[in-house]
Image (cartoon, rainbow over the protein chains, first blue to last red):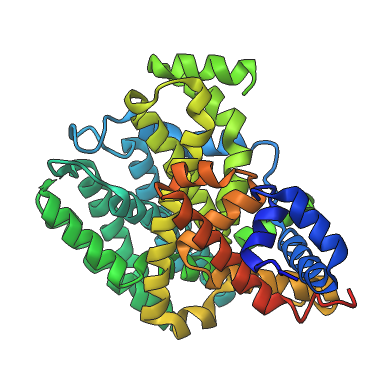
Length: 253
Length: 187
């Protein structure tokens, strides 16, 4: 008796076999192939057991909020209108200044400021750093994904990189003083890339862009930023992304 | 695609941002599910969703009819996911131990389900999916979860039908080799 190969059974399972009737008949007759097919079906059913974290009802609006500023800009390779919204940069600077003032205990409002508990300082640092890392990560992802037949204009990224680099230096120093060596090390590495973008040419030729992308990728910087960012969020008491998405929403198969 | 999606697409082609917003509203959830299946990671899935929509917006000139929207979205998302998975592989090779130790997305908190058989199977599936090559993973996702035919997958991924089949066969074979002990005859 001729038995069917795994490939034949896979195609049969997905309804793409050239001879479905013959295979169905054979499976009914042949114990060996029947068992094989049964196991295959169970394995493929098991693949359905992996849950997809459910997005909330506002998810599309969240996607749009992140997407819209990019759509409003002209394509990367067309013009230097790629600026991050200036007001966002200003807001970021203001927040960073407040955070850093808080961290170094320099509130100017009162003559005799109360000492800030160490735990609270660290928590604020972690929250601020995780936000900073997320902004940096988005910038790097945009650079890694940038392409253009005749090079790209990175004027706007330079502006963002300059802004982020300035904050980065302060966060790095604070993290170092707080004994957060892992964060400080990552920020040091990130700073080099941010400085490279900030101080480089505003228009990158294709090979220059490819070189920058290779340097970002070879260090695994985007992934490491994400990892440390999530860790910082978690250590600060904020829910990690995965936990947050699960909360109250359940899982969807 | 429904009426809303049709209108959204027509308006988007005219460069109307509001129309594109409707398209995003209609497809975001589906895109996230697809992206998560292909990447197995929320943050990566979010990046795939963002980048897919961004590229869709940029490339309207290459788009022929609204009937192709679905396969077009699949194509862009798949290509980007493959790029991203390849990058991730390189990063893992470069610094696997360090990253694995601190990756909070791996879930270090106790999960009551972990002790159950179904959780064990789920964890094994996730692990094996992570071990597939980017093309195997994407081809398998499109076939198994998205229900695309092998011909359609070939079009989306830019592969010959025989190559598409091979990616799916290899993916299923690997999954089967790893999962068979868990889902054997007795289950």
